Amino acid sequence: MISPGRHLNRRLEVWRPITSDDGAGGQDTVLVLQSTVRAKVDQPSNADRMLAAQAGSQHDHTVFLLPGADVRRGDELRGTDRLGAAQVLRVLAVVEPSTPVYRKAPCQLMQREGV
Image (cartoon, rainbow, N blue to C red; front, side, top):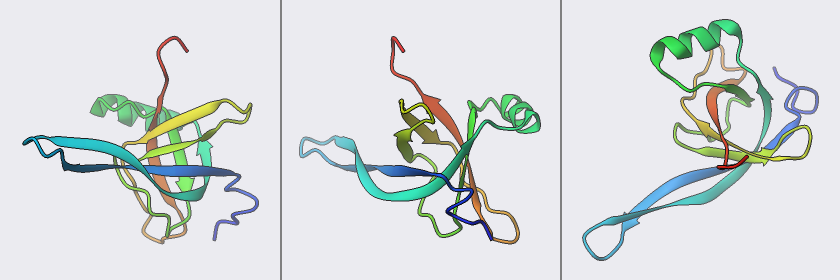
């Protein structure tokens, strides 16, 4: 079992896109804060990067979570990096090993223009 205190050393907010009718025949999508989760954020391995490149994915960070963390494809994970800078990661997928001791989310770092 992953020890949250030792390995999952960051807290990330989970923001989920919610779509609703706008009253004029269209739809609005807003991001809504769902929860805060414990996480570990890593650079992907070379093998992960190669697989992502072959699939045309923008996978540049891997986030590890507890098995029960409610994180889904399309969510944004928001927090700060080790230097205290704001960081937003878009979840590309969520996978679990055959023995559910953790969840793994390949993510893309979203950077504001000019940063």
